[in-house]
Image (cartoon, rainbow, N blue to C red; front, side, top):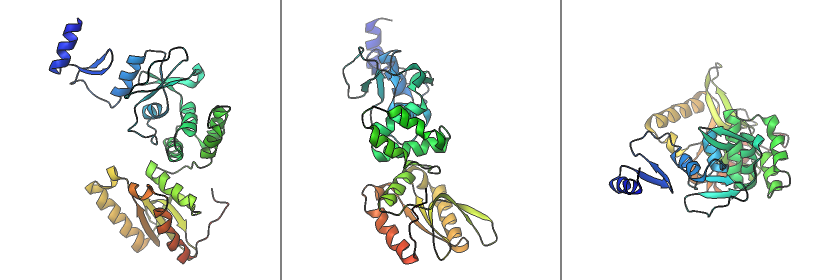
Length: 286
């Protein structure tokens, strides 16, 4: 079609311009990957989705979803940076690339290794926790990520973040709460704690918990805004909390995302409760 036709269709709304040379029909189905597909079509087949863009393709949670998609191009094919697209100029070996949803992407191991080095601590550990929860990587594979970081910038910090990953965190908020507690010397005894009634019936699982010396648990719940504020979820959380308190020998504290923005609030709540209960950290806990 002619350039004039494209310009006319764009003015009338029959086409939406996404990137230079890339347009979208507004009525077409959207699976949430339009920005990534548009970036790939704009950059060409030599490009590779990395970091947050790669995580999105794998379904991993942890990276900042408000950042522009990040793609890598081989050295020698540099392009100018743009506000809606972040470019890295990396040479990525073929055995560290794969294809997902038709888009070349760093494989899971390389994606997580890069995330550990280049994302913030909370984002990196959240990404590792998410990949473990999804079964995309097993704990025994974490040393392989350390090997992928060798002789790359920030590899020392990246390897430290591997040590903070744990199986059981189901959301980035759970990871953030745990890290705030860890930094204050209040490392939880367990994640996804099963709570039973006196008769042995399973009442539910707590996001994380502290085993109290007098018996029972202090359960810590992380209440994500987009799930736990739904009416059905509010009722479910309330009924489960009442069951824990009345039949499960468990106390509960709850935190939201805003509670984890600063470093002080989470330990300021947990510390006095645990101290009064006589809880002491056990350095052998993972």
